[in-house]
Image (tube, rainbow, N blue to C red; front, side):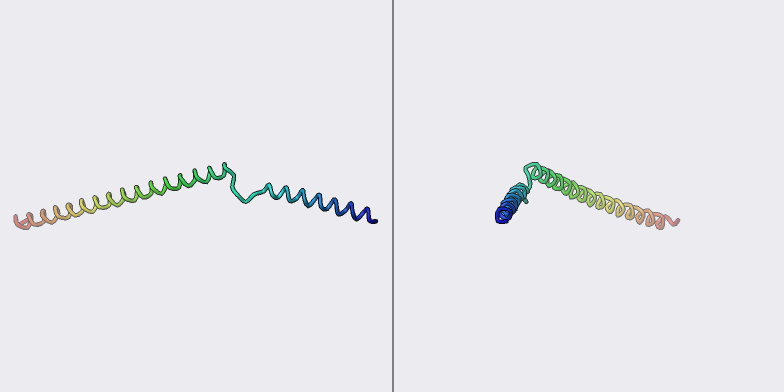
Length: 89
């Protein structure tokens, strides 16, 4: 019976040692490939954020342009109404 317990203990120790080697291979650190993919994604996000900022600036410029043209149009309409009134129409 002592030999049987000794064998069981030895087998349990071997299994525990094997399991510990297996789990040591599973690291919580990312691999080089994963780090490269992460860096690529970060660069892509930065590029897209820059594109968004550029497009927002372009949109603001276009909105200002439209507002200026609308103001000029309104001024022309006012001038035209004043001329019509002065001519008695």
